[in-house]
Amino acid sequence: MSWAGFKKSVNRAGTTLLQKTGQIERTVDRDFAEEEAKYKTYEKECQQLQKDAKGYLDAMRAMTSAQGRLADTIGVFYDAADKTSEGAMAAHAYKRAVDDLDSGLGREMDAPYRTTVMEPLGKMCAYFPVVNEHISKRNKKLLDYDSARSKMNKLIAKPSEDPTKLPRAQQEFDDTKEVFDMLNEQLIAELPQLLDLRVPFFDPSFEAMIRMQCKFAEEGYEKLSGVQRYFADNVRDDYAAGQLDAQVEGVLQEMRELTICGAS
Image 1 (cartoon, rainbow, N blue to C red):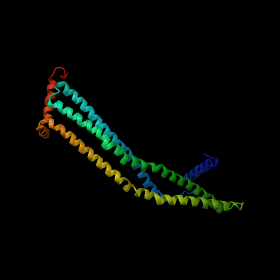
Image 2 (cartoon, helix red, strand yellow):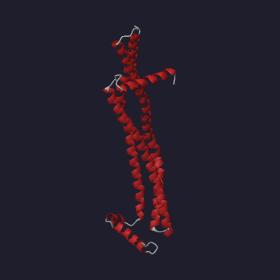
Image 3 (cartoon, one colour):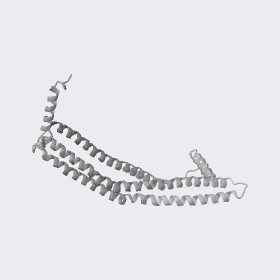
Image 4 (cartoon, one colour):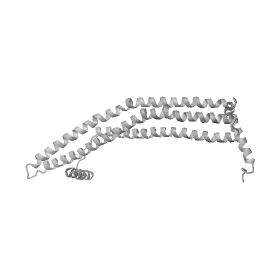
């Protein structure tokens, strides 16, 4: 930071302190405050959306990986019992299905999801530091403006013996007011435009996300439906009637009756 920049920072810190103690009037711009509040809400929501979008993709990867591990373990159970049984064939079919789903995640979702969802979100969020820098600059110029106005008003109320002080203070006030007004008006005009663009900007991403989820779900249903042909025709009816729960409970009861599994 240059010496001039350092002096400005010190002066602005002093102005802020004097405003807190009521010795310098603080300019309140309700129009800007309203637009800034809307913008800050939008910034927070976009950053949360970016985080959640990444979390969704990570969760999809974790799900397909977990399915693969489940399939491996189930296959070991059935192969150890009878590799030629319907259960073993179903386990192998399930393994093939989840492997296809795992590879399909990268092909049908991972790369397209990054291109159509994550990248647009990243581009939008990249604008926020730039906008925040302009807001910060506007706030600094506001402090300069308030400070210059206070100096000028004091000289008007109590004229100095030096006749050049008031004209200099007036010029400083005019200069700081011009710079502040320019930045303030620009932000009041452009912040609403940024918010208005959010729907047309995110519409294509939202549609792409829904289409990808739908395609992945359809493929998952199709592949896993193929595993059902290895089960008896009445399995689905038994499940709907609650009979499968009874069968599982019956096997658990048999396990409890074994000496090595008996309750102590």
